[in-house]
Image (cartoon, rainbow, N blue to C red; front, side, top):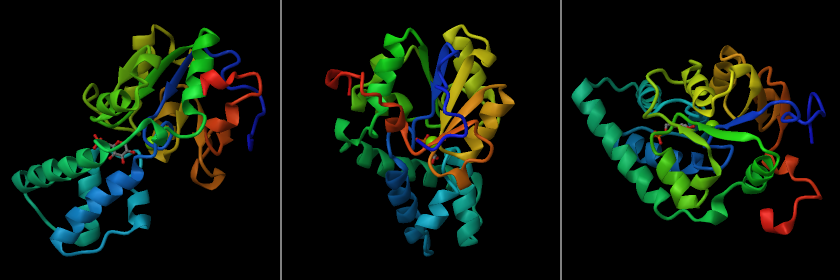
Length: 227
Ligand code: BG6
Ligand code: MG
C-alpha cells in the first residue's frame, strides 16, 4: 500500500463515505463510450485523455467541457436533448454490467467496515447511482445514499458529503471520504473531512492517504466469504 500515513483511515472515524465511479465500480469507460458517440455525431474526436477531465464532474458540466473541446455552441433545448441521448447510451451499457465489475476489494472492504460497526454512505455525483448499486447487488451495504438527484451543487462543492454525513447522523469531522477524482477530494476537504485518494499519487492532490484501490485494505483476516 502506498500511503502517506500507514494508519488505518477508519481507525477512529465512525463514518465512511464512498464515491461510486472509479472507487467501487469502473464506469468511466461506459461514460467515455457514450460521450465519444455524441462527439462523433457532432463531428469531432473525443479521446481517453479528454475523458479524464470528466471524472467526478456532473453530467451537465461534462457536456459543457465536451462542447468546448469540439468548439460547438448550442442552446439549452439542444443541450438537454444531447444530455438525454448520452444518458440513454450510457444506461444501455450499464444494463449489461455484472457483479464481476465491482472493483477488487470494494465489496469486501464495505463488509469489513460494517462488521467493525462503521456507518457507510455513498456520496456520488451520478444520478444513476441507485440503479448501479442495485445492478451490482450492493445497495444493502449502504446506510445512506446521496447521489446527483439529492444535491443542488456538484463537487467540488461539499454539499454531497455534508448531506451524506447528515444522513448518517454523524458530524463531518467523524467521516472519511474515499475518492478518485480531484473535484471530490477538494469537496471532501471543504466539508472538513479527511480523504483516502484512490489511484496514482500525482493525480490526487493533498489526500491524507493514497492507495491504488480498495483492495489495499483487504486483510488476511477477512474470510473468503466477505470478498
Ligand atoms: C461521476 C462521474 O461519478 O458522475 C462523472 O465520475 C459523471 O464522470 C457523473 O459525469 C454524473 O453521472 P451521471 O450518471 O449522473 O451521468
Ligand atoms: Mg469517481
